[in-house]
View: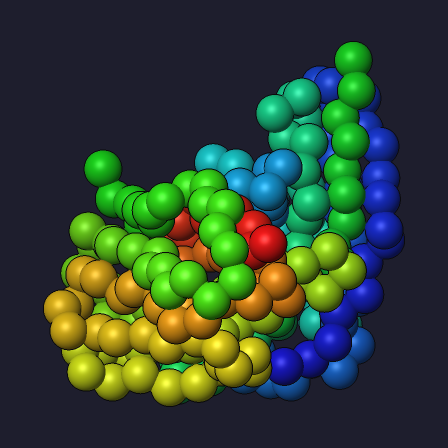
Length: 114
Length: 114
């Protein structure tokens, strides 16, 4: 899997947008960008994924640069419950057993404050 | 409600006393996997299963066994636990046909071996 680089930590005021960047300069053409988050030692939770187009769901938006070497996860109106570690992962498109292994790095610890 | 359940959630045991951590999913997922999470090391895959009676080693299988006799269950067995197996364990599942695949995680089992 391509290696990703994320800032160690970020702060965000409640109600403001949280923009979490991720660099994945070695991503290959068949790899997707996934975002998961982990709230205080709970099981990781899927947020969103994309290949090359921007994506939006009820939780977040994902902006992928045209060259696909970086992306940004946007939480449009962060709340205290969004305080978590956010992981950016790039993975092959197809599930082939070991390809389904999720390699989590250290992620970005987002602290949402009042 | 679609979910992955693990039991027990917390366990303190002594070296050498066999234990089993159960994992069950109600989503008819073919793929199931076990991870351990340790500070500074991220999530590491222990074993995975592509379907009933099909299991394979992940990155850190030593000291662990698994079985997949039914599609919904994937227990993790520690035949002779040792202190270095003290960790936070997560079970995950996903569909194989779905590409890209989204993994659903259980709530975690915190194991302490003394």
